[in-house]
Image (cartoon, rainbow, N blue to C red; front, side, top):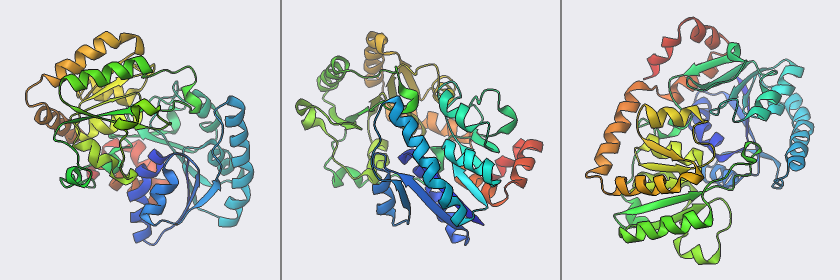
Length: 364
């Protein structure tokens, strides 16, 4: 099979990384296309994978810049797709769905966000894609007939115990203390982030002060540039070690939805501060069904600080969260094993899943 994959974000690569490796092993041709986004290109280089960067320059944050980037991707991808002659297109980007429809190529859109969160992307993508492959809990709006839901999360594709193995040497590698907190700060500049707020300077200062009062070391991981007065807290690690460092953390406080999901899947207590609270089904399930994370709106800072103190005063916090993690894992499938099967057997795999959704539990 000749498969063309477009990656627009590091999280999309992490989701498909092991799937790509297994497809390679099975002698399928997979061509990876990317745009410049955060540490995406660095991750591919570290893993030694070949790729083509179709947009080397980082786009601006305005709505016009986002629209212009979309148009450029369509113009660049069109001749590339014709040249490669793929059997299948995989990605979450609208141009793949649009061009796949025009050129009559099988196409799968992989997402983890609800339609109301990514409404613009959904309106541009869902009418043209064949299949929307996403966690069962995700709402895809009126395009439910195109949805194939699986019992899992995108981030389980790289954090499932069958793939992710904790490395206890990571603490000595970076000289990390026994107890430390990670604060993750997002840029909040994606197309769906307009009007969204998270951790501001006032909240950040109070979080740092609170952790210091508990003698817990603070490390900040930030998508954007930090002010000089926070430089002492900057987490200086290789991007590929982030999940190992996160696994061993005492707690995560973040306005990043992605890292909050990762922490929950790893069994690390997490506090989310974001206007997205209550709007993302994956995190709502992880919070209310499995009690692995807690979300607060920015204006609920008093309640948020109270929850942080409650967690820090909880006996056997780490063990408790690992037990909660195990309860979650018992319900979920090995997402990577499922993905490889689904892609290799596409589009017949859609029919199988529609007729017998429990077939996916062969990949527990």
